Image (cartoon, rainbow, N blue to C red; front, side, top):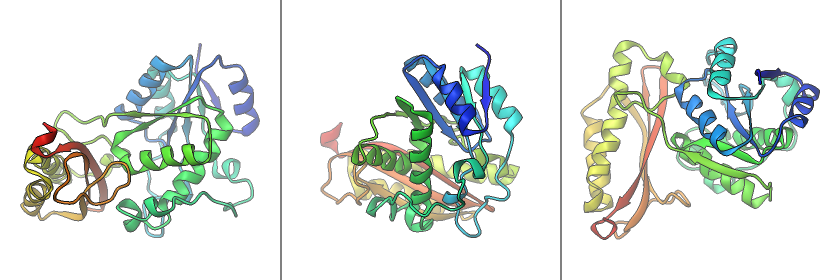
Length: 284
């Protein structure tokens, strides 16, 4: 089956009605890379049909963020989607997704959307959840695949699907990394060669924190922070060790699952990364 490219709601509805189920959706903002390919391939293994959305969502960008310069590479995206096993691509413009302009009703991310990324990017997750909800309705997907790199987004999408009874299975896919450890991101193409070397400090900090996990939360935070302090060219936004279920900072007595999350600006580019941990000797 050749890739079907749709741009309007009517085209999407027609293509979707022809797909055998179950149907999986992989939502992207374009500028696809090997991480997206992995999501599509994982979806292909679980579902009879795979639908990929390519939509640069203006609602999730704040003032001064990189909406205007975000890479737009649709022809390349279509080739990657087809090679990875997609059946349909939905690539609408903003006027298709938001036919009345900015929506008067939006999904609120609530308290979970106000910490970590949400504290640095107010309103970001309201925009994310609003478009995810719309795309879930438009695609009528049975499964939706999201990367673990955006751990807070993944948690919020799962909470929205559960709280609003959306009836879709949300599937997490582990972070895909470059050979040197840098988490794959569409924004990596902004990095100069110097910035690219500096950006590796994120993965080194997470690895140091993970190595210290048996010693407890303070050791994790200290090990990661020491690595970051040794690279002043990376301007840290936050480094947090949190409960993966509610994003609350874990106390010193915590033993068990935790998420070490990090955001930093390298040159003009803001990068995020995280690693799941088992903290404390009793969790070995």
